[in-house]
Image (cartoon, rainbow, N blue to C red; front, side):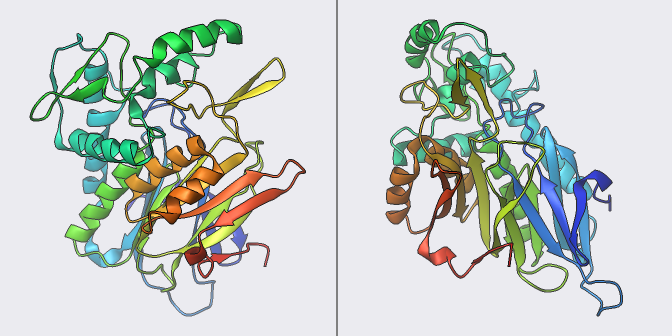
Length: 371
């Protein structure tokens, strides 16, 4: 098995290794929709202590970010299978692959069907469901506005906000959900020359799920899969203890990293969306990279970070984005009506402190890293 690259390792204590997963997505799933900083904590036995269970560890680069995967060694070497999954996901949903399905759809003549694959269809269907559930807060068809605000390949121009507002208003009608829609079978069609779709807010979570499906098919009982900060885990780690995942404090300095909380993760997925590291400032005003599809404008509220626990990583990924659009109050109300979800929300208290909300069911799973 390929070893974790040395630059990903930093020692926290004598017997703890942190695999940092910084979401840098410029190479594959297009825009950096957020920086979700999760730290996967794998407990290793210290030198001289009892032996630990042998597990395969595979890490590296994929989808424009890092990945770290740990699983039972008795499953054999599944590196080739994992690499094939990454390749398949890129061919389906990478905006940086000129031959991918999503690129061909976005470049197609309006009204002309483009044949997709099962993965694209599944992600589209899940996106449709979550779009409806969140009253439009989650909308992958917001892609024209993401490009316009400069959080994709295009860079932010120095136009005045007034002129941008004029353009936002004109682009909103091209960015509503359904401007790219099914056209029968596995075919999809875009409805205008400015329309497009971007699965960046769900595709990496979906990739995690597909890798976990591979492990399930191979009867792997213990594993942790992390891609770009999206994590899903089952069973126990090398020391036969529950997998532990660290959630970063929402510090805007990308060179500074501090843990806000540590959570036990078994049988669930976790994804975090945040607005504190991807933004631009103009005329003394900060604009978040999180775009509200309903207004076409960057969101402006106190919520800095939304960590979502869900049965699948694709769901956690999408809901985390939706909650960053909603804000804390509406996100809490939503979760209270959806018992399959749990959240850990960090908001700005405007005095250098944070306001924390966590689902009651998380209280026995969360620990303070300073203790």
